[in-house]
Structure formats: structure tokens, C-alpha cells
Image (tube, rainbow, N blue to C red; front, side, top):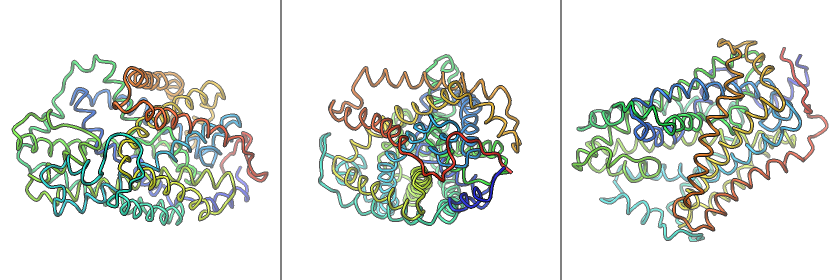
Length: 510
């Protein structure tokens, strides 16, 4: 049973005002840059329309079940990732801090991409990038030289990055409902409307049908390739914002008697729906670009930074009403990225508040100011693009993916926590969770994600990532991934305040 002290403590931590706000916040976290610039190309490269089969299998056997796991941890134990793991079993607290470290690392570089998108949203009106978007982005805008480390700041990046961090600090200081929740309630509907407008405009372009044919034409033989199934599981996992503490943190802000399984279904399906919508918009535009250039769609199809800041500006140069198309695309990137970054920062702020029993404002400043300084110093320079690329690759693969696999195995086999988490989900859940969920979380999903992890590891070991100098890959790749692991378990050694209920005590809801 909850006590009056528990209720006061939770009120001080902050709460979402309703299940609807929680769902919008969770969707805001899940729908990020990867939905727009990663999914379309992954689907195209892995069987086109046939990819939808392994994608849906991965959604229902890994994505949504893992959401169940994180929702159960946060909602049952009412804490940040470290506190929820500590309440599950004191020895697992380090897993939560490992996730906090991953989020801190992501925050310092993710803000930079939002700053780029913010600049390009305004560049769209005057087509500032000129006739050669590739040369402009890497040359005039980023002023990128040879791979290395430089402290030569680029004003065109520094100023929008300052604006992004200023907005983030304000939102995070406002708290769970007034800051995180209200931002999601406003931004997610606006994001959907903006992207729908972009898709509709893209579909009217000449050659759009060729782009859609390239995306959705099924290559059924691809289903026999294990790498295609691994790509599907990897895409679902990365796009849902699972595995690094976000959903544990968000679910801890939800009222006790809430349908968490139904919420997970809504979030999972909404995220996938947006990914498919993004695929339609992006490949319709790429079809137009291919026809305008007189080449096949495959020759212009790309993903990530190349799609956003090189290919799309080239499309804007040729498309009717291109300025509007460009603004809608980059504005969507800003909205999707901002809501995701808010959720990443909330993981760190929530953990600091729980561990040190400090105020919201103080925790916000303690977290965001160092993040902003590292972000500004490390990524608004002429070498920022190279450092970002390496850190992003290694933190995603050997940070997020590794901690998720380890967490599943520990919860399932070391502390044997799945049955009690299943019972918690079934208490108010509209989707019954049975033995199948325990099998998925303890065996199937760890094995599949382990396969993805090992494949990525072998690829990096076989050839230096990105042809960067070995010392850069070592420092900003392997050491960065190792740092969040070591720091996580060192932070777990700091004792909790005496009045913080931990030590694996189970908390039964009223």
C-alpha cells in the first residue's frame, strides 16, 4: 500500500496530469530523427515492401514487449532508472546509471543536429546552400577540414546551438507536467500536421510514384537473409527509445492505477505509423529528384545526415514550392529532435533528483549546463561532424544496445523479476501479459539483439569505422562507450539518502 510519505515524495518529483499526456510524451520521445531519416532507407535496403513483415514481427516480439518491461519497472517502482533498478534489486542499480550515462552522452551531440536543422529551416526560404548542397554543408556551413580535433568555432553552428540549449534549459526547469508534458502536448500535433503537409506536397511531385515503387516493391528473397531480420529488430529497437531509461523514467510519472500495456500498444503503433508516413514522404521526394536528375531512385537514395542536409536541399532546389517543402522537412526535424532530446535529458535530471534529493531547478542546472558546455565546445567546431559521427555510432551500438541486452538478461535470469513485473502489468492493463512475454524477454529478444550487437562488433573490428584515424575511433568510440559503463557502476556506489526507500523494497500500489 502507498503511504502519505510516498504520495508527497511523488508529488515533489512531478507527475503527468493524465494518461493522454504521458502517451504524447512517450510518442514524442520515440518519434525522433531516426524515424524520418533512417527508417525509409533501412526499409529500402532490406527488401522494400517485404521488409514490412520482419518489421512487424520485430515490433510485436521485441519492441512492444520491451516497452512493457520498461513501463513495468518505472511504474511499479516509482523512480528514475537507477532508483527503479535499485528497488527491483539493490545490486542492479548500476544498470540504471549506465543508462543515465548513455543519455548524457547522447544529449551533448543530439542538440547539434537540431541546431543544424533549425538553421536549414530558415535557409530553405533563400536556398542558402546554392547549387551544390554537399559542398555548402561540409564546406561553407560546417567548415569541416580533415578528420581530427579542432577548437576553431563555427559561428553559424554556435549561435543556433545556444538557442537550442536555452530552450531546453527553460523546458526542463519547468518540470514534468509544465515543461516535458506541455511541450509534447503542443509539439506532437504540430509535428504530425507539418509532416502530413510535407507528405501531401511530396506526393504531388513528378516522379513521386517511382520513389514509392522503389520503397514498397517487395523483394521476397530478402526474407531469407538473417541480416534483414537483424535490421528490422535493430530499427524497432532504436526508433522506440527503449533500452536507455527513458520509458522507465516517464512511466514513473504516471498515476498508479493506469493501463500501461494499452499505453505501450498506442505508443508502439503510433511510432511505426509515423515511420511509414516518413518513408512515403521521403521516397516520394527522392523519386522526384531521381527523375529530375535522369537516374534511378537507388542512385539518390540515402539516409541520415546525407539525406537531410545534402539530398533534401537538392530536392528543394528543383521542386515547385521548394522553399515550403524544405521548411516543413527541417521544421519537422526540429520538432521531432527536440521532444526526443527532452526525454533524454529527463532521464539524467530525474536520476540526479532521486539520488541527491535536490530541487528541480538545481538538478536541471547541474545536468544541462555541463551538457551545454560540452556540446558547444565539442561539436560547434570545424571537427564537430567527425566526433559526432563516431560517438553516435559507438554509443548507439555498444551503449544502448549492450545495456539493453544485459538488462534483459539480469532482470530475467539473475533477479528473476519478470513474473512480478508481469503481475503488475496485468493489474490494470487492457492487454493481458502471459507466459509468452517472459519467453520473449528472457530468451528470444536477447538472442536476436545479441546477434545484431555481435554483427555490429565484427563489422567495426574488421575495418576501422568510417576510415577515421585509429586514435579518434579509440578515444571517441570505444573509450566513450566504456566510460558510460564504468561511470554508471561507480555512481551506483554512492549511498542513497537514508530517507529514500530503496534496497529492493517492493511498493504495492493502492
